[in-house]
Amino acid sequence: MKLELFLRHLENPQIYYPQLAKVTGGVTASILFLQVFYWQSQLANSQTWVKVTIEDIELETGLSTIEQEVARCQLLERFLLKEKLLSSNILELWVDIDAFEGKLNHIFLAKSSDTIVKNRGEIKHHPVEIVNQSSTSNFTIKTDKFFGQPRQQTIVKVTPNYKFNGPWQCDEQFEEFQRTLLEYFKMQGFTYPSRCVFYEIDNMTKGIISPLWDDFISGNPLGSSQKVKRDWEIEAGVPYPAFEEERIQYYIHKGEPLEQAVLKARSDLRNPVLGRDLWEGFLRKCDRIADDAIKAKNLGIETPYLPPSFTDKPQITKESVIKKLGIIAPQFSLESSNSNMLLEETLSQQEIKEQASLSVDEIPSIASLQDACKTPIGRNMIENLIAKNPNWGYEMVDGEVIESIPF
Image 1 (cartoon, helix red, strand yellow):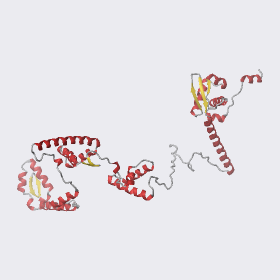
Image 2 (image 1 turned 30 degrees about the vertical axis):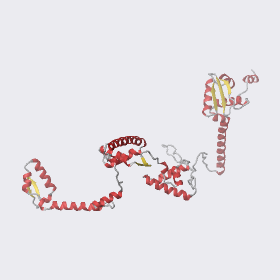
Image 3 (image 1 turned 180 degrees about the vertical axis):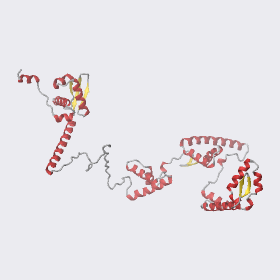
Image 4 (image 1 turned 30 degrees about the horizontal axis):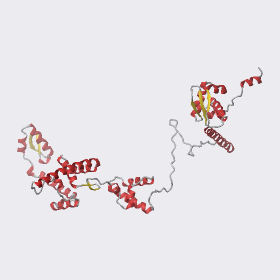
């Protein structure tokens, strides 16, 4: 057969580019990519998907079914191809030209930069190290053969002269708000009030509404707008005295100390759900007591019975307690610290006890000790006492108490 006739039967040859195989992932992938791109360019709209069969691809490219599957996987992994499987034999394919162009540009730019660096090195006649463009450091990191490449430090850009931007009008107003916030968090009992001030201001700069700022602008005490007055309170956070006293008496009758009773009662009344239920029960109790009192008055009783919690009592304050203690025992008043006085009295009492223990009158006689040694238990006890008190001048010899000889 003549060569011309042979080539005519082979039809159009498929062109293979070695550089294209590096981008697409292999020879078969590059052949499939070019064929789908050719079909896609023949359509009126380049965004339209190409509908083909496996036999059509094999007829045009010569790739077998397995080779086509491998080529499609390589292109899909590199985000160069999108496919839809309509049936076991029919496919819809679409190649992403923009992604393909970006990968080509990256290879060509890297190749051109390497060529420039190598050319400069040949002119200067000294070795030049080719540094990757993605490297952020200007020096080579030495690594140990037993350990991997150390992780490079992350550089975080910081805005110079950073300032908080918030609803305040001037720096003076901002500083005054900070001082007021600091005092507020101190009064609330926070361990680190300055940290709370920072978090509050930082949240405001991020657009979060701050009720504390609203209180500051309106001239009200900070936190006043967040307080809620309950039905059982005279004002926000202050319950009715009779209601509070009733709850305190409840815990006292359960055997709690007075301090714990006050603590638990106030904790219960601060709970909105529990406080509401207790308040409703207290109202029912008061209603029953009032009915009984009305009946007693109708029967002629001038002063009906009321529980102790309804009795008017003066409020207990620090000043009233100090005044009473000052009347009873001025040396133990709460107004000043008496720790030094107590320490001096304790030391003086210890000295008196030591002197008394050293006195001759309290040293037992040999006869009394000998009488106590008649039993084994008494003998052991006397032996321990003599060992603890060598100043008595006694010692135990063969179970008998004798005077110790100093030489």
